[in-house]
Length: 107
Image 1 (cartoon, rainbow, N blue to C red):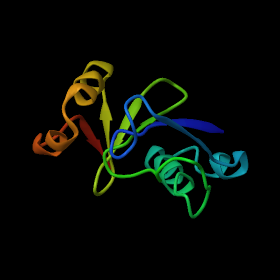
Image 2 (tube, helix red, strand yellow):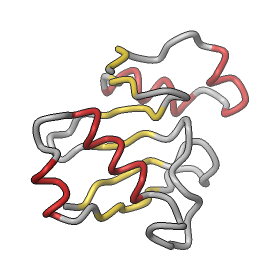
Image 3 (cartoon, rainbow, N blue to C red):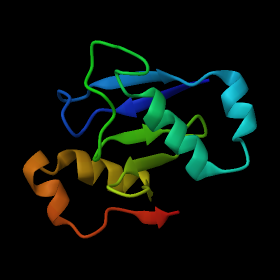
């Protein structure tokens, strides 16, 4: 299954990395959103799936096939509404971490 990751931590403006998580792995983890997001993060590392992009990092945003967005946090993930994602994108990179929370934390 392919996931889009908005490379907002270190990528260039509007850079998107496509992360391919093997279907068999997705099926095993389908009941846990956090596990699935963790797999996208894992397979988004250049050690696991080399690409001409930076590895997925804290501050990047995973776009799920259902159209929901999740920011990679230092521990776990936060769900971002589309309007919050747009504000996050419009905030200068150096200032994004000054906001205590950008979305609803999930565990």
